[in-house]
Length: 114
Image 1 (cartoon, helix red, strand yellow):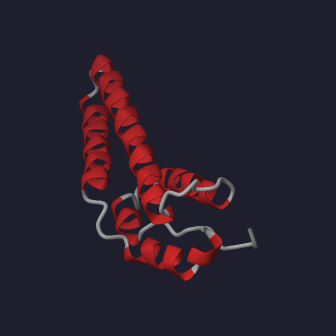
Image 2: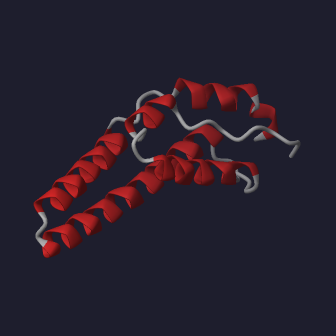
């Protein structure tokens, strides 16, 4: 496959996760695999969505673990931060949006993903 720029993180997700740049990087990592692993007949946009959903599910699971750990410590400030993070991760997963920027990327380069 010719050198392509990486698929973009949808702006909706960038906006929701702006306070968690490491999570945005992890989303980019999973989208970058689109350039190295074939789709095997699966629509690349759909595959990218599934990858993002899977990574966001991981974030939710991690946030749940952080909340449990914070509750075990008993520090109200840490608990509130963990609750806020869990809420953001859940909201990102539920409200991914239409992702026109990601869709456009795959439309613009569709011949390279066939």
